[in-house]
Image (cartoon, rainbow, N blue to C red):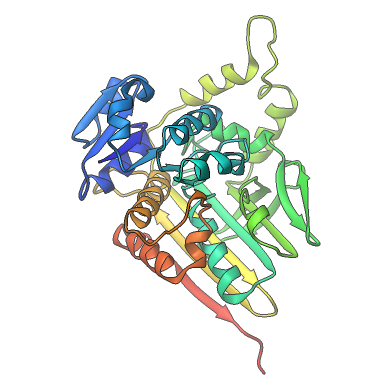
Length: 358
């Protein structure tokens, strides 16, 4: 049996994928969310109150907000559970290395879209082509730029705001540096999709530790005008966690953003480019699936986590401790299985390379 913690957009996609081949137990504090999943076993409330069920599971996939994920994952590892986690936790996942090794289990952090799939592709270019420069371009966008902010909450509102407030770590001249994500807004084009505003985002995560390169960064795309609006809100204190009287501005902003509407169709744009004199590039455009009613961000995140879980369950990973997603790109059989699983869900990457003439 596999346990899935969280039955929201991402958790539902994980359950949808894995329930075809495995018995699934899903946990959520929302009865409405649970009702919308295909799981055989559904548990309402805190998953840790159902330890006997969890301990019967071969593996746990967690799809919780980053603010609570670290503490929750730590408890699961202490219970001796293998964990695949999709969250954008602020803490360094390698802080859980000792616990995972002591309990002889695996912990895959950042097992989603970006970070997640992008790490796998970056790891592949690094290990196979020995690139020393990496550029990661990603976007989760509504198909229509709805006013006033020309965006929508494609993942979760907490993660959206974190992207604009958390310093983005990048590599310049071989050294890790932190930059303000909204101080250097640039314009980038993405094929026939046109031009977008781009900002540095803190998606490198474990890549900062596992890859030794000269230059590396992630940029996230938004429709023109959105980032300027977010910078204005941030600078005026709307994203602050410091109480203002009886109100916490960030919590109020999260509530307002959440009520902005969730009925939209979306797309994800991905481009991972590595170079070392030659240039190697993976690109993908993924869209809302009208047949299943699954949003693109849920597809890219949930199916990535489900595919990583399947690779672990296949027995191809003979390891313990923290296993960052780029490792799936380091090893041929793991990489081939992971990518074939994504292709079965309609997520395929175009690959091109340009080598200078000899």
